[in-house]
Every structure is written in C-alpha cells, then in structure tokens.
Length: 170
Image 1 (tube, rainbow, N blue to C red):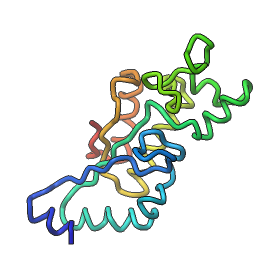
Image 2 (image 1 turned 60 degrees about the horizontal axis):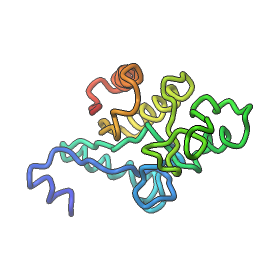
Image 3 (image 1 turned 90 degrees about the vertical axis):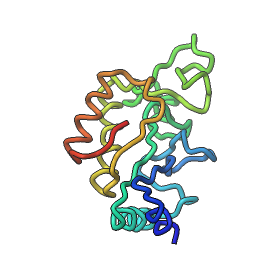
C-alpha cells in the first residue's frame, strides 16, 4: 500500500492540505472546521489513516487556515446578516472595504477573522486543540502565518502544547 511505500522511502511526516468542509476545490476557505469534507471521506476514515501513519512511526501534520474563512462559515453568516450577532466582532465590517468587510488579499469569498478578539481567538484555538485531542493530529503547518498577530500565535502555540506537548506548530 502507499503508506508502506512511503515508509520504505524513509518518509517520516505526512502533511495534508485542509480537509475541512468547504465549497471550494482548494479548501483554504473553511465552512466547518469540525467536519471532514465528504470528498476526503469520513471522520472514521481519518482516524484509520492517522492510526496507520502512526503505526509506521510517521507523523500526521495538517495545513490549518485560521486567518480567513468561507462566506458560508456560520459565524460570518450571522455577523454579516445581523448587526447584533455575537460573532459580529469576529470580523471587521466597514464601508471603506471593497466588499464591506475585511478579507484575505481582497478576495470577497475569504472574510478575515479578527483573532485578537477573544471569542474568535478561542474558537480557533478550540479547533486546533480538538483535532490534536480527538484525532491525534501531530501538529500544524499554519497557512498565512503573517496574518494573525504575534499575541494570537503565542496563545495558539501555548494552548496546542498544553494539549499535546510535542505537537508541531509551524
């Protein structure tokens, strides 16, 4: 099988692109961080894959996007449609932005999170610790790490290491 072949080549880490629920082909605009997109299988398939990777002494690293989300991300939908929504502070809305809200490189389909806002920060940290704790993911390659603040990343790393002391956060 493919994992045996990779092991024979001396591969020690499997790094996968985002597998979260999304409508895009690339997966860098997540709709639901707690679900596996059906294109990639099920949560049970993921558990089996990670177990097989670990059985061969390899590690499983996930590409994690925390800077921006999909237009269909429920907290953004709430924030965009209701000015009194609790999630409104997770994003920056202003008519001076081309799309009326801050985005990742002005891409309308990728609203950017305000990760220094405690509820948004805590949500993303919970996402990361969930996959470490519940699926034994070994760590993260952090997409667009230059976006969130150093304070956010310090908190993120601390909380991930609290759950899994040897996790990779890069």
